[in-house]
Image (cartoon, rainbow, N blue to C red; front, side):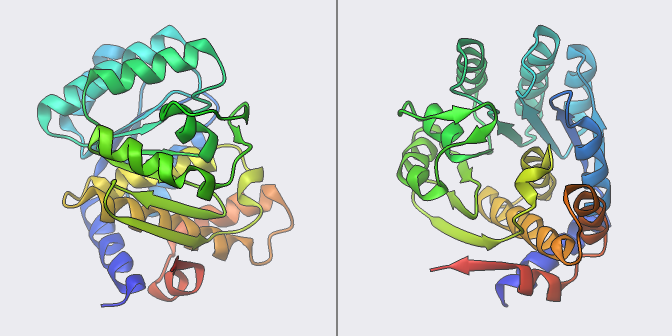
Length: 266
């Protein structure tokens, strides 16, 4: 089976199952993430209330925790949902937005990772370097590092935490500490749309909800993200039309789109 065929097979399983993906995400991207998950084929639930989040998490296929707006309500809900998910055997996916930029974000990321295991972490290079305890420069949620610069740190972090780490960028690096795959694709307009990085994390949650190997789920999610971006970029006039086209691309994604828009890098 080709790589594109394997990704498309899992996308078909996702579309058939429509797994519930609970998102405790940042206030900027809630609508973006929900629409993208719907277009992909998942069933999103968005919440910032701790009791609600915990009850939803126990019913979910996956829980996505995003610390982009780390207010008390959001963080409390994120930790409650993650605890409930772990108790129910539901995979938790973590997005450490701007993890090293402020003391508050460092504390939230530390609390999240110390509370218990996660299935996967998806972040940019600066965020992953910060989580790994290495010097990283960031401008808000934007990375000042290339994904390859964080590859070794990502492998060490994955080995330490027993999870999958994805460093997203022009080339995505996915590792579980022993395995590593690099994936190229997408489009240059993707960084110009607020929330597409967060959407990538939500896609990881959707594929993780299918069960099985979190490493394969993360790779396949990032391949779907890259392929949808590549399709969306064709004919887009700018970031606004790109995002509308991205939703349509995710909804109609085919095996041929995946083969053309996402490729493994040796």
